[in-house]
Image 1 (tube, protein in one colour):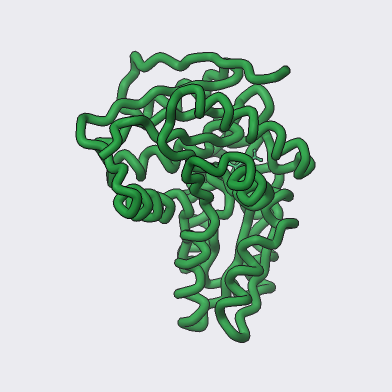
Image 2 (image 1 turned 60 degrees about the horizontal axis):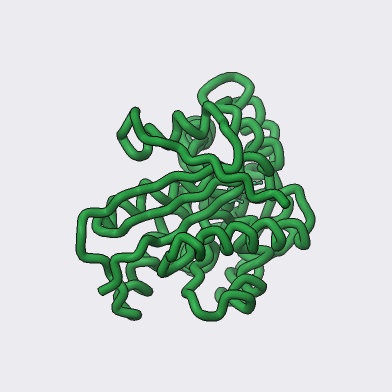
Length: 267
Ligand code: DGL
């Protein structure tokens, strides 16, 4: 047993989609979430910059005495998981890509054509594509970077014509040309627009990595015997004030009075 918190982080509010599924599955765990709202988006930045930012966040979470770090961000998982595990050897670090890729592998084995959408950093890393193609003979995974989605979602532009046009702009041709049946939402911000995608492509199966990662977290907590045994609490940190971040935190924690702590990590 270990009642210390689990630390989660993302470039902004996307990783909150993981918090919702983790608190359903693991209600006894304390959670500390850090959203780097001052420096979002990460997905269009260089690997070196993403590594520097994510190491600063891990240092902060370690000061908070976390027992595990979850990278609730595909861009950081794709570019920096190995770097962070090497740098912080004493703490389990969970990335978000492996568990979602496992789910996509099952679909590829059934003959589904898999599409991956994500940030520029995630797509150019080929992380999902490589794992799936190496695991399933003959699989041919199509992928597409959709860099405008994250800034729109951070601004709360979700259920309206601007987002609808952006979805069609990025996906109409991509899905039709590649005959995609299963689409991996390879960015933790994208579950916020899942309904929009479903409306436009009702026959498409969506894989949400934020759902998959909670299973992996539970597995590791049990294996290492560090499951918590108490009522779980949540603390939220952001590197800058953002109305939309506050609104999303309130929704996810179902608490309109919840405090957001501001912590600027920039040197
Ligand atoms: N939510 C993140 C991801 O999963 C980061 C997006 C970004 O900052 O560009 O990739």
